[in-house]
Length: 300
Image (cartoon, rainbow, N blue to C red; front, side):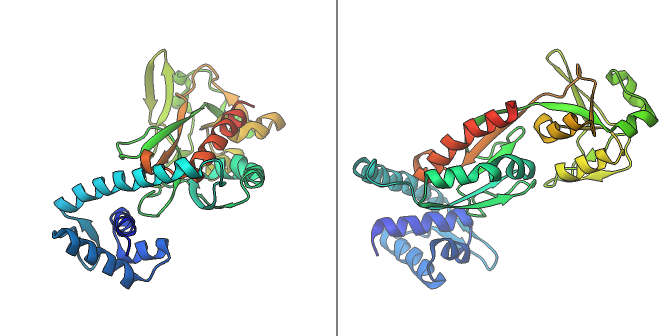
């Protein structure tokens, strides 16, 4: 087997921590993947992977070799691209995951335009509010909303997402309309629990440059923006929500903005992908397409 192919197989095994998942994503038999890694270890004379029944992880030598493989593969692909660029169009399957409401309201309705522009790309679109494992689930890129942890992934800023406070007319008729955070003591919030951590987010607002928080009472807890909006429409409490999410409800009067001078801080939107030097043309053109799409949709 070609040495670069061996490097690519080894890199994929490390990234997904499994011979079986690597074989699935590469479209190869598991036995061929295992044999390729064994051949590579034999060629260089060191053990690259710790193997257990549940997980595969790189050894210390394997970690160093993995980083070097990434550079070698990127150099080879960049060299090939010097002669291919402009002669071939981006092609293949693009695996991307996006938050639920952004996927349903913004990306899916516009996706036909992307596919028309790039007819040789197929898109596998995951739509979920949980934080997916980009490498472990063999995704090319993901859109994240909110602060980022130190994941080691490459980030491309896509703009910010303004938040507003809303309630239904029925809720406000029953409980009154809060004018400032000082009035929140007499109100209910619909709690939002992170789908990944289960942590319930507090009520937030900015005072100048200072973030303030309040743990409000609430009788309902949800783990998706869709459910949060539905419960708010039903009059179960106040919510903080991206403005684009409830634009039509505000126009129709089924939801009402409250405390417009006391918003939470806007949330950053980010496109994440594994390696800058290993970035496919599919991801490049998708990033160039999605950034203006999101900025226009959020600002409308």
